[in-house]
Length: 424
Ligand code: SAJ
Image 1 (cartoon, protein in one colour):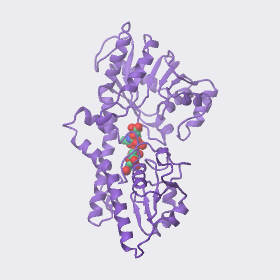
Image 2 (tube, rainbow, N blue to C red; image 1 turned 90 degrees about the horizontal axis):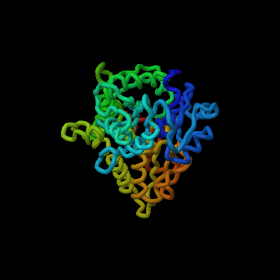
Image 3 (cartoon, helix red, strand yellow; image 1 turned 90 degrees about the vertical axis):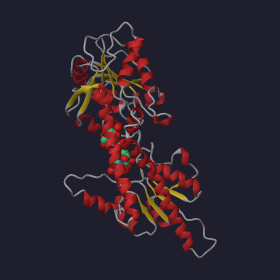
Image 4 (spheres, rainbow, N blue to C red; image 1 turned 180 degrees about the vertical axis):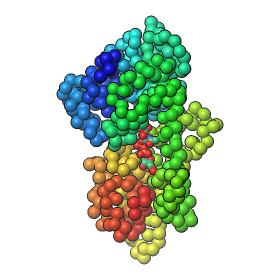
């Protein structure tokens, strides 16, 4: 343990803040995690967790029982502060920095000379400087570095260290991944590096704050563009009667080609959001970034059209005029395989639209949840895999959960199947 960091305050106890607080606490640093959600605070103080992430429960339980981690509604004085609050977008795809502003306002009164403040939230370029200016406004008694690349002596160290962990593998990736650390000054970057070296086994790569902000956005925009290419190919291949999965697998045999996989759209709270932070800063220049977002956002519509076409074909073939409306089974609601996270999920969006269009006809198979979300209550039925397979007229595979992959042979035997994930 580094002597200079005995106490840490983490603002935001969500998918990033809580695991980060827990790994520091596991290294025997006193950590106070802060959240506005009272029930989350109470849950954590009981040694339990309010989110789903493998292995996190064990670490939280251990560190709370040993007295290294506690949760609170308001921040305490510390040697370092990490801000890990959400940065969603507002109407018009502009970033909403209000959570960062609120967290900054909350920590400003307890800051003292020599403290380090790190912004971890994925942010548009300029957000760390905006945060520093916010602190400077509240604490006129402290010398705060408010501009990137400035040198000189300051009372508070300010840095940006974007999180880059993959949901589902957070506890491993937090420790193993390299970290990009952008300092408002070189001293700020060095100070933040000392903090992260407490648990990071990967390299801590130092840069300035604006480059660090842009690096994180670049990584997610790169993935979005690559997936958009795969999604575009899937629609082109369908039109030309070519199997897109075989096509991509063959093209990827080239030593310098690595195309990602098409799906029913791109979801989650990162890849579907972050590229807009680039577009909103430089709308005229970020043409590919914007187009990729548009292509990926349009993919669910294309899937819905395929379902409509299949339903029309079924009713055209049916001789019985009184045939009941066909039953549609949607396989998967989560935004990606093997998780229970439904945020910004294209599969959830598709299912919701189908349930509206075809009332009482939609069933859902989602092995990772025990009840459907509020928005679908009474509109769809949550059924098991066998039931869906036996009773559905149309089968729409939306997520490649391991349970579905395991049963691919059985899925192959049913007719009327739309496989948006290529598991067949
Ligand atoms: N997806 C596809 N095809 C693919 C890969 C993904 O359609 O070939 C879809 C998924 O189904 C999902 C969406 O993209 O709907 C996003 O999933 P993901 O696994 O690509 O990424 P996230 O959002 O879980 O995590 C990303 C990661 N970023 C990169 O891989 C560059 C992670 O490292 C970041 O820390 C995280 O965003 C974040 O917090 O920003």
